[in-house]
Amino acid sequence: MRLSGLFFGAVTVLVQRVTAVDLVLRDEASVKSAASSIAFGLVKYYTGNNTGDVPGNLPDPYFWWEAGAMFGTLIDYWALTGDDSYNAITSQAMLHQGSDTRDFMPVNQTRTLGNDDQGFWAMTAMTAAELKFPDPPKDQAQWLALAQATFNQYASRWDTATCGGGLRWQIFNFNTGFNYKNSISNGCFFNIAARLARFTGNQTYAEWAAKVWDWQESMNLFRDGDVLDGVGIKQVNGEEVCPDHIDQIQWSYNAGIFLHGAAAMYNFTDGNPIWKRRVDEMLNSTTEAFYNTTAVNSDTPVLHEQFCESHVICNIDQRSFKGYLTRWMARTTQLVPHTYDVIYPLLESSAKAAARACSGTTPAPAFKGHPGTACGFSWTTGGFDGLVGVGEQMNALSAIASTLIDRTAAPVTADTGGTSSGDPAGGANGPGSSPVRELRAITTGDRVAAGFLTSAIALSIVAGCAFVMI
Ligand SMILES: *[C@@H]1O[C@H](CO)[C@@H](O)[C@H](O)[C@H]1NC(C)=O
Ligand SMILES: *[C@@H]1O[C@H](CO)[C@@H](O)[C@H](O)[C@H]1NC(C)=O
Ligand SMILES: *[C@@H]1O[C@H](CO)[C@@H](O)[C@H](O)[C@H]1NC(C)=O
Ligand SMILES: *[C@@H]1O[C@H](CO)[C@@H](O)[C@H](O)[C@H]1NC(C)=O
Ligand SMILES: *[C@@H]1O[C@H](CO)[C@@H](O)[C@H](O)[C@H]1NC(C)=O
Ligand SMILES: *[C@@H]1O[C@H](CO)[C@@H](O)[C@H](O)[C@H]1NC(C)=O
Image (cartoon, rainbow, N blue to C red):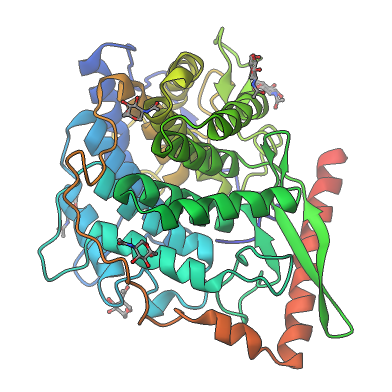
């Protein structure tokens, strides 16, 4: 994933039409038809199944991780609506990206592949196992095994040499952000570990989930239930000093990834009061931070990306985060049933607002879905804001389809119908499976370069904040 630094996205001026995606909440046919229009517009961005293209890749400017997230969104869409139109391209993409090394570490992505990028594909595989997405042929990588391979590699990358533990953002020391330990990378580890514990019943996964949570707490990355972005590491006389700074920005996907993982732990531990308190506290903060209470045309708060949305400065990655929080909130209602009464009304208000925002018409080639149904980014304005793309389509698709969560089966486990086969020892042979060794081999030259890059991140954050204050 790219830096969270801010830039002004080019805002295309688009012709607005009055047509929108029609949506009548709680009318199953209407919800499915609205979701289907939006899914159609989403998949039109995908070129990976065209002759000569690479399955699993989205065209520029979308990074590889976002494609992994898109297929997770499409698996959820299938599970919620029963529409299997995109199952074939989803399997094809997952297997193409996962099968060579059986760990979502494709060599082609080495230059940008961070722990979080790998994690979004692995969480998609975990979702496939939990929702009984059709299993691949036996000679191919299996969903559960892909998630386990990623888990094992995360465990091997756990870095106690600095900050007493945690995963670094990057896997390879030549990539920008190697000197940053962030909540999304550790959140991927936590979320996958918690769900593997629940799916397999193996206590080792639960122990790792607890360990990641404790580490986040020890770094003050949880502030009364708010999830802060990460800690930077500085080089002083050739030694790494931690933390150099804490990036305090709150992103909706960081909140969601920990909320959902904590929900899986609550469910796995049969309602343990520690996990109950953690879920409740994080849910309280999440609803407070990310639901806008003054949204136009809504009596109930509506999901917004609080840090960048109203300033119109969210980058391409950030413009997809609301969709993940939505999906994780929806699944939390199944794993922790008492959260339903708080979460479901927020899913409905956001779905309604998202449908209103799906009323854009744009000249080709940006959007190729049904005319008049391009989804804008902001849902609080009561209309279409002119920002379109894969993130906007995914967010709205998840918002609308997630209102079917109350009539959809909960994620299964190996004991309650799961069929995906696993490999507890997976991930040991792929490239990048032993970066712990690589860490020890860092040279002074690398350190200088990495230190410079960290400053670049710190500066971009400072610059971003300064802009927001102005
Ligand atoms: C790619 O997938 C889309 C959506 O399922 C489908 O409409 C299209 O025909 C496929 N293209 C090829 C070349 O298979
Ligand atoms: C890697 O890139 C090559 C060349 O574009 C392509 O043929 C191959 O399918 C890609 N592999 C993966 C896993 O994306
Ligand atoms: C765990 O999830 C299942 C499936 O949704 C649910 O039936 C069960 O009540 C949950 N367990 C607890 C302790 O809430
Ligand atoms: C969450 O908010 C509810 C309602 O305001 C409150 O009753 C509860 O104590 C809070 N829970 C935690 C763990 O903060
Ligand atoms: C909530 O949405 C309204 C309408 O778009 C906007 O004016 C306001 O700034 C938003 N509030 C926050 C805290 O971003
Ligand atoms: C439980 O998971 C750990 C960690 O991957 C693995 O080493 C162990 O073999 C697993 N145990 C069983 C019974 O599968």
